[in-house]
Structures are given as C-alpha cells and as structure tokens.
Length: 226
Length: 211
Image (cartoon, rainbow over all chains, first blue to last red; front, side):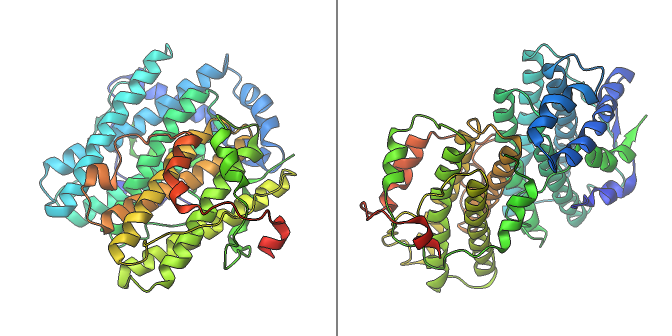
C-alpha cells in the first residue's frame, strides 16, 4: 500500500558503511526477518494471534526464542536511529538553518541521539550486542541545500514512523513495546513538523501507516555499502 | 475473534454523529475506579471516550470561525482524524462483541472564545491523548488492535506537535515533549479531562445516541 518515498533517499547513493563485517551482517541478518514480515501480512488477513504463536517462532528457523527476535528488531531500530542521528548531526553542523527552523530541528537531532543511546542501553540490558555506529557517507549536496536537507529529513522521518509501526505486532516483550512506542510517538511529531516545514501534509491519515522490515530494508539497502 | 487492520482503516468512511449526544457519565466513574483494564474492549471504550471528547471539541471549535488559512486547514484535518478514530474504535468494539460506550456530555467552557484559547485547549487534549494511549497500550492483548491503537497514538502526536507549533510554543516542551513520550494512567487522564465532562446525565441506549 504505502510505498516509501525512500527509494529516492539520498539519490540512491550509499550512506551507510558499517565499521565491521559483524555489524553489517548483524543489520543484514534482519533480512532473514523479511520472511516474517511477508508472513505477517498474509496471516493478518486471518488471525494475527495465530501468526504470533506459530509463525514468528517457526518462520525464522534459527530463532531460539522471543528475546532473539526482539534483539534483532532493536538492532534494526538502532541502525535507523544511527542513520537519523548522523544525518541531523551533519545537517545542524552545516549551518543551513536559522530562526524557527533551527529551533525546531535542533531538538530532533537531540532526540535521535537520545534514541541511539536508549536503544543501545536496551539491547545491552537484554544481554544483546548492539551494532556499532555505522560509517555514514551522504551524497554531495545533502548538507549544502536547505531544501534538500529538509526534504530528506521529512522522508527519513516518515520512513522511521512506518518502520516502528511495522514492528509493533512483532515485539514480544511488553516493556520493550512500551519503549519502542514512546520513541515512535516522537518520530511522529518530527514527521509532522518536517512536513509542515517542507509544505507537505503533516496528517497523511487517521492512523499511522506501517511498513514491514522488508519494505524498509528495500528502501535502505541501496544505501548500505557492503 | 479476528480483527483485521483493514477493519480499522475502513472506518474512516463510517458515519459519525454530527452532534455527540449528552450521554451517561458511567464511563467517567468507571475510569475513576479502574486501576487497569479488564480486556481489550475496556481499553477501547476508554479510548473511545477520549475520541468522542476530541471529535466534539473540534466540531464545535471549527464551527466557531476562529481560524483561517493553513491553521484552518490543519484543524479541519484534525477533526476528520478524530471522527475517524471514533468510527473505527466503535466498529472494532462491536466486532469484538462489545458495546461501545455512549458519548459523554461535554462542556468546553470558554475554549472557543479566541483562537489562542481554542488552540491551547487543543494542545492539552492532544498531549493528553498521546499519553493516554501510551499508558493503555500495555493492556491490549490483540496484536492487530495494538498496532492500530499505536497508529492512532502516532497521529495524536502529530496533532499535538503541529498545534504546539501553531501556537509558537518552545520547541522542547511545547512542540516536542522530550525524546520519548510519557504515559499517563487512566486516573491521571481522568483528572485532565474531567473539567470538560459535564455532570452525570441519563443513561442512554447506545443505538439511540448514534443513529
């Protein structure tokens, strides 16, 4: 249904370069969950709960239990947060914005930094290994043209919102779900403000759209240096 | 019982009562006593009461002619969203075999005396709504309902941010409420919205209120 505008993200140039093969694999391992996303869409037409009982455990054969799936979701979220955080670090530092725009976007940078920390701590707290910060290489022009920067930010936030909402029914832990939701709500605020700043629609629908990991990865994959 | 996400989404086209009738406040008192929720229908009825309140608030506010231009467009869209939430939650409750609560009686006082009062009250409602959904989400057991509720929660956050920005509030603490959203319990939400709920009215048959 809702295709991400992410296909145009950064003009299709690679923006993520993982520091180690481990980190790259850890992120790409989420591709294994693509099957889960696809299954979910199909199963949701029947009984979502039956999916959650059976398919989540069986569709990904290597999963030992719910915690492992949640950790994968967290590392997926962490990578997206690293992307956003790095993007805003560069954009704010570039001095493109001023006045109300600067005042509105600077807290977004701070939030994304906080999300990176929060998700990292959560992964560690669950006994997992957080992916390290990937190397980000943005295409030329991203941080020299205000309009391009804000448009990219808007695209990013909408994709992030959909990514979080796509994971809601897959997260097993209640505590983790609450934490993810509390972040997702903030991403919605960002998305609305950036839509307003760029002349877009802050309220694209009465319910946030969602994308399975598959679609988000499809948008993100071209930007990942292997 | 199976709820598909499409059941939620299609509610957008459903008819919402133009006037939210004065109804029983039994749900208000139920909130006051409820430390948590018995089941998904309970949570949905809690959300429904808030959505009734918001939908009626915007219906009255947007009729007051306080806004123009982009502000008016935005608030019109917010009203449509809230009406959609009412419709989708009602239909979901019925699909679950439950009975939607009647709309509460409401009185928004002087909220529509000025643009500033209208938007300020809206800002309070939206942020309360965001926190209410987050506080109640943990009680939802059906994952499809949870996803839809989360989807509504996110839209309330959009409303809150935009209205805060229309008011020219400080970005942090006015447009954004921190790096993470804060949940509220049902008792805290009741405290926040009870000034807008009028005294107990007669119990009303649900069908009578909505058709």
